[in-house]
Image 1 (cartoon, rainbow, N blue to C red):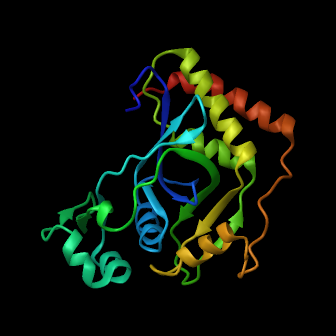
Image 2: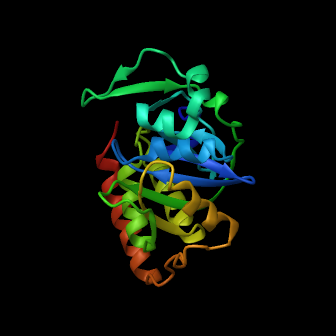
Image 3: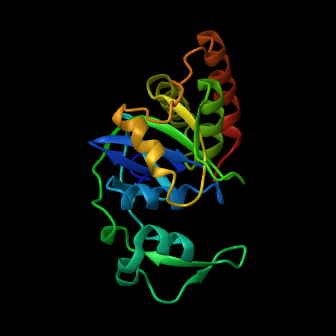
Length: 231
């Protein structure tokens, strides 16, 4: 899909959608993004992806890439209950750390969303605490992290320049947060509160205090470094 005429920038990110608005959940391996995406999908949000989020450079939309999820036994039991047996393969796979993961068919969990604009960028982070907490993330930090999670597959410098421009536009338009993950099954409520505007937990507003000039300086530096990386 993303090799099509250099139209897409894929990110290491899960993604879901709420009322036609995309939510990116960027993170590397072990960040908790797959379990979070499963929790949100099981809670009623549309599912887009658990690992790779293709960003359309022409319209800054996130497209669905609904491959099967790989979830822990705890996640399957907590989030799916009895119906997990119907949509999960019986024999688990072992991840890189030797931990069994069960393959879950996302179409048995939620509707598959359509390409949609991105309204929030939420970086999940594993923690030892039991309570989920959303923290505003400065746009400069969000930009740097997104650039680090971008899959640079196209050799054309112009494509890489467009990709940096897209990431810059994304952090300017979408509120950015870091989510300190709580116990499985407790994180979706925090995000749904944010999406609905109810703000039951007193979630701080996203940071808009970044110096615009500094954001431009950082994006230019990323533009210089990005051509040195290629998958």
